[in-house]
Image (cartoon, rainbow, N blue to C red):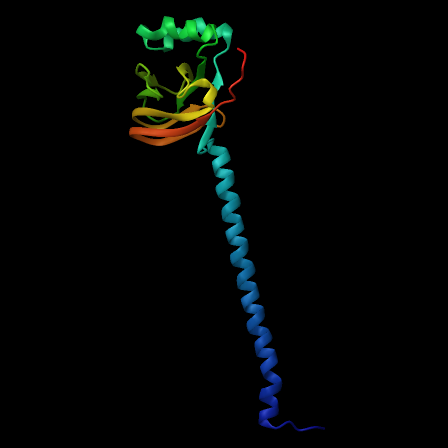
Length: 182
């Protein structure tokens, strides 16, 4: 039988101690990496579920809906804006506004470029509104704002834009596909 000296026993134990430390470090990295990946996946999923994004696509009011859309525009501008949309000079964008059930009703205005809508009471019943695009139609992108006070307000575009607490003004980037024909 071989008797190991104290120095030899320590030397043979050291690789085992190094392997144990490497194993613990590797385990910590796996756990931390997994937690980080889970966090990213959860954040992405919550963004999809809430419908919020930093940019949304606007769609046009259908030609068959233009006359009805006039009632949601500033009355002094409605006739001209509908005529411009019918002639394809300046199409109108379609939005749907709603608030979360249980939140108090809110009064808002939509700002789209230089246009500011009449005030709308937002309830838990979806309302469709027409607004001019926030920039000349061929540009294909712009910024919209909602002005007012309220909680849990969603402006449906693609994807929807949810404002958990509105106190003054909230802005949102939008884009659209500038189609050459109406």
